[in-house]
Image 1 (cartoon, rainbow, N blue to C red):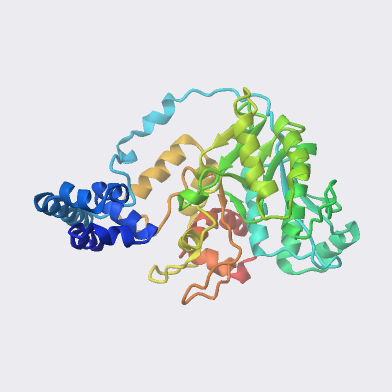
Image 2: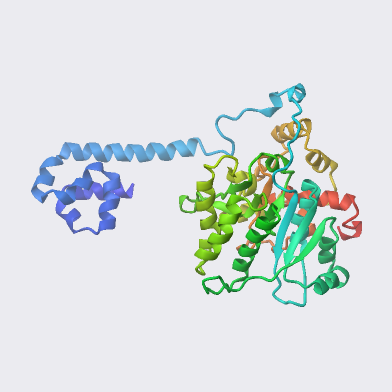
Length: 432
């Protein structure tokens, strides 16, 4: 609207346009298509071309367009559901009986899970509740042969932590399949560039782990929500996912916080060498940017790289607005510590009928909160739980009480695994 008024008062005096800054000329040109011609015309010619009648028409047209757009969004606000929304409740249960059972092929990607955990204090290994959430979820949903923790904690420090550390560290280290792998984190590249940040050293170790062992790499804030056997058995040597973004500037990248690979795959061999060559000390050059470039180009090789949609592994972005939507507690929703069986077993079985029943329930009135996100298309939730901005009224504690209250999207997403841990006696009843 203000640009329209600006254009109206300056059409009479094109000489004003010639004196304006480039940014102002651009703004006017976006409002009036003919205004972009003004810098190339003489003042006299500009006045001749734009008659008073044409001026009034342009201003009226633009004002009407802006006003009608404003009124449209006031009357028809955006909704969380797409316009072409088909209710799953109309699908009969017999639909699942029509699905044929297809024998699974030999897994091309090993069922091994990898985490990297480097110590700031070489004498102390501590893992928190959030580490328990992701590692227990990996054990529960993936049924892996091993869950590797690639760490610079010595075997002595690791064994000491299993006996003498805090409760959550001890619980993590006693999860079935947990296997320590002692590593020495690199501190310099072959070109002599120092690797100072712990995050960059972890970047190198994750690539090495997948290159050597193959399997599934997860950041410590990436939480499995269901089994990924179908992706491991897809026939691709590597499976990676796009990174969700709120802005175009940050879109189009591949997420390196969740990666799957066959041992010594072409992608991992190239990525391993290229990361050493291209590392320059900047935050993302040898990690996200490099992986995006290599994965996109190698995807032209049959069965080499499958790049799944962002919602598969990272349904939210790392930006503050999205992290707030995921973690913010909704205190108007009553907190309940009652363990509801309906929120557990059905989501763990993974049959067609269970999934259809769950989807139908979500369509029922009152079953889903207005703030609740739908993770039904997500295998893994990369939560980006570091550096959360201050949220009023919340102490920022992501703990057992926070999850059992189920007042946030994160809590509702990870609750089934915690429910299972309680039922299995891993988490004692006295704690909640």
